[in-house]
Image (cartoon, rainbow, N blue to C red; front, side, top):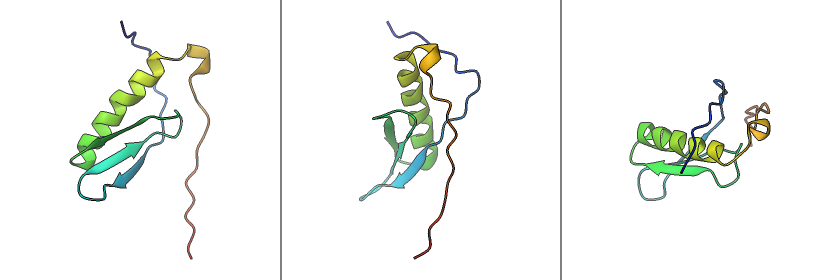
Length: 76
């Protein structure tokens, strides 16, 4: 039985990638192996939300990742 864990409104970063053929896949770097996909960006984001919820169900409340992440762009 999967238990629902409340994450107290914590926002998790996700990275959206365009698929090689079509659609999108999304990863959440806060959890190892946490990713999903969808035909549209909106669908992929809905699906990764569910994946994050499943990851949260597998950790203790004290182990829920809360570290800050920043995005940096590098021009070459």
